[in-house]
Structure formats: C-alpha cells, structure tokens
Image 1 (cartoon, one colour):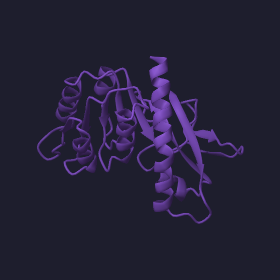
Image 2 (cartoon, helix red, strand yellow; image 1 turned 30 degrees about the vertical axis):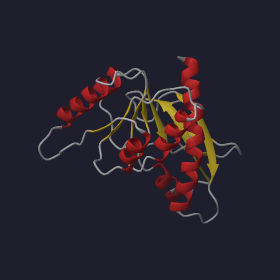
Image 3 (tube, one colour; image 1 turned 90 degrees about the vertical axis):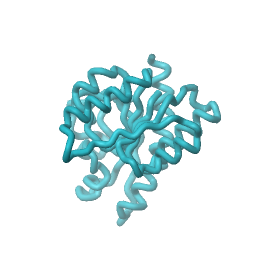
Length: 203
C-alpha cells in the first residue's frame, strides 16, 4: 500500500501504528506528499517508511505534466492499493484509470447510492452529501446537525465512489470548526482501519 498525504498526517500515523503493531495486516511501501513541509513526511521518516515529495510548480509546469510525474512516482512503487489520507490535489482521470485500487478518506457521511446528493442520518434526518474539500466547513455553514467520515473507492466522479465504510458524528450545539474537526479526526481513525479491513477481505 502507498499512502498519499498533504498535511499533518495524523491518520497516516494511526495507520502506520496499526501496521507496526500487526493490528492491520498490510504493508506500507511508501508515503507520497505534494507538500514539502507536510509533517506526514516526518512521521514517515520516524517510522522508517520511505517517502517521496512530488510538488507541483504551477508557474513552470502544466497540470498535465505534473499529473504524469505523480503517476510515475506512484507506479514506481507498484502498490496493490493507493490510500489517500488528507490528499489535497484532485486526481486526473488518467491517474484514476492507471490504478484500479484507490481509496480515499472523506470527512463526511456519504450516501451509499453515489447518485444521491442527500443522505439519511441515524435519526432519520436528511442532510446534503457534503462532497469536496470543505465538507466540515460546508456542513457548519448549512447548520447541519451531523457530519461524519467515509472511506470510499475512488472513481472519476469525485467523492462518488463505492463506500467501504462510514460513520456519522453529531454536531454539538454551538460547536465551532476546530473542536469539531478534532472529533472528526478521532472518528476517521476507526473508519480507516475498518475500511481497510473490508478492502482486504474483498480483494
């Protein structure tokens, strides 16, 4: 498995710890980041996991050229699975087509039917399916009583791939974004582990 992460890497750390303790029967062959300053790179180094940085220089490089470099860097590791944990770059169709096994962690409770733009929560409430990079921010802006986390397969349609696992999280009255995000991150760790176990079972 190759992990792609753009930031702090707290979920990457949780996965690496689960692998090291043999609670997750999978091998991490490398971490790849598009951010030279991502703390995820430090976490990988501390865990003895090889890491690569593939940065997009928007001034001197086309999107297509960058995506080719990204694809080549991942292909060189020959991973059975590509796991996106806080990866902040929309993958090209050519990348998605090149790797049949890509899964993404998304900070929202996504519907099982990828065509739906609403999702039914445990209390029967229907809320929008908050897709895109600002899911928690958008949920708060919409005064949604729920957020959540989903691990799903990646397809050409952003955040609409088949769901591996998902968990809801109720928003507390008056809760601000920072403490809510901290609780979402806690939820995500379990979602990633259970989703990866399902992926292993379904291989």
